[in-house]
Length: 228
Ligand SMILES: [Zn+2]
Image (cartoon, rainbow, N blue to C red; front, side):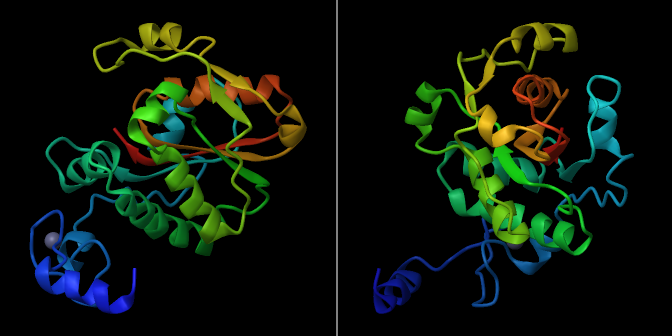
């Protein structure tokens, strides 16, 4: 779009903060400064012992795990996730992941990692939504870290019903054989960072991780944009 058209659109539809509705200044991208400041950050300092690691502990060997935000009901983060998952506002996924990715890059989180793999959507869901929100997050982390993002390595072979009312055991059963690693050649002995939007029990991450392991992937680390 030509720049003058963008400025004209800004005059007709001025950019507003999606959380509080205030007018954004030229320096504010996506969120106003106050809402960005009040995002529920986890501030996990230690990548091997934190709330995200606890969800996965004792179930599979892994290197590091991190979640950037607390996913709280009726919080700004829930509103932002709904915007990018169900209302097509892809910029918000990139924006939030970049906030986290820059900090992680400064703190050597990505050191010794070889590639980033987003948790895939089933082909039907991808067609419906038009994009995979985990891939948007993975690509933003790829920009921050310089690591390649590999979307062909892992596929989801069946759709899963909503997991919200299921127990951990039921979730794990529900996730069995959902994922398949398609490109062992890309994974063999590599240190993979697996990326998802929200980690709840960790069942999705673990099911994806097991498929990567079976395909010969070496070390594994995890990133979730939010921890529910
Ligand atoms: Zn705001």
